[in-house]
Length: 120
Image 1 (cartoon, rainbow, N blue to C red):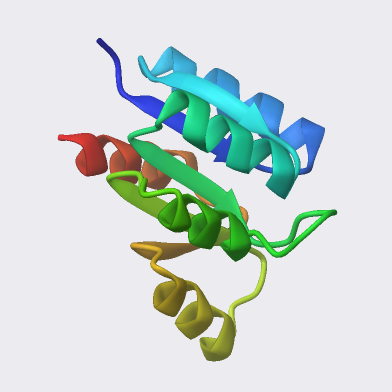
Image 2 (tube, rainbow, N blue to C red; image 1 turned 45 degrees about the vertical axis):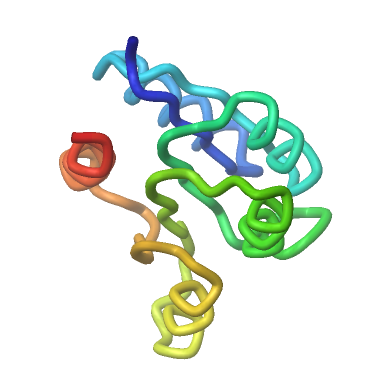
């Protein structure tokens, strides 16, 4: 069975490209474009890895992680994805429980390596 990835990204262009990339690497990918969808998919699909955009149209992306925690579930690894490079954003993501913070645009090889290592 292939590892399950929940990709939480509100940009249709980015989410489509990343979905194709991850699926071509053998991962099963569910995509959410809002925090609400991410919460629902997180509980329903129990992903191994979550790639979490922290800026979503309906809520802060980190609220998704807190909601999943409250439901008693957390992916093996959660990686925040953001365009913000400041130390405060990084600290906020790590404090919320993210394993690392990836700065957009994330290089393709780095993304595949990180996700593969998380489920190895």
